[in-house]
Image 1 (spheres, helix red, strand yellow):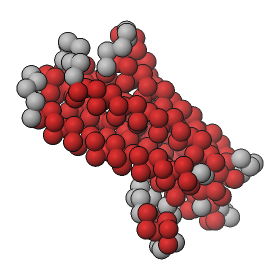
Image 2 (cartoon, helix red, strand yellow; image 1 turned 30 degrees about the vertical axis):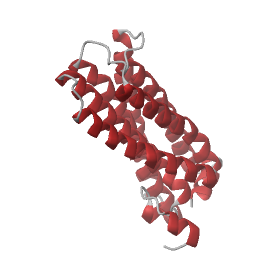
Image 3 (cartoon, one colour; image 1 turned 120 degrees about the vertical axis):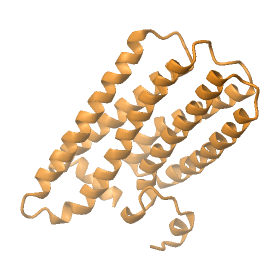
Image 4 (cartoon, one colour; image 1 turned 60 degrees about the vertical axis):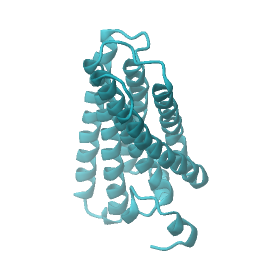
Length: 228
C-alpha cells in the first residue's frame, strides 16, 4: 500500500499536499534531532540553539494539525472512500514523526540535570555510538520511504532493534557504575530518549515492509511468507 501512497503523493490527488507536509515534518524533526544531540553532548552550542529546537517543535505540531485537518476535509467529500486506507496510514506516520520532535526536545532538557561535561568513558562512548546509529537510520528514512526500498528498510529495522537492545544494556551498565547522581540521570535519560527516537524512526520504516494493520510492528516471518 505504501507504493500506492507514494504514487498519490506525486500526483494531482489532494493527498499530495499532505505528502508535502509530511516530508517537511520528517526533515524538520531530523534537523532537530541532530541539533538536540549536539546540545545534549555539549558541542559548542548557545542558548539560542535550545530555543531553535523548541521553535521547530512548534512547527512540527502545526504541520501535524494541518495534515489532520486536510485528511478530515478530504474524507468528508464524496467519492473518497478508496483513499481511507492511505489516510489511516498517513495519520499513523504523522503521529510517529510528531513524537520524534517531542523526544528531540526532551533530549535538550536533560542538560538541566547536569552542568559538567559528560565523562569520557566507555559508557558515554557507547552512547555516542548509539546516537550515530540512530541518526544514520533517521538520515536514510526519507529516501527509503520515498523509494519504498524494502531491502534497505529491513536492514535498518534490524540495526535499529540492535540499537534498542544496546540502550537497555547501557542503562544496566550505568546502574552498576560509580557515577554520581547527575551523571547517572543524564546518561539514563539520554539512552532512553535515543531508544524512543530510534523506535519512532523504526515505526516509519515499518510502513515500507508491513501491512497497515501491522504498522509499528516488525514481523520478519510475515515478510518472508506473506502471512497476514
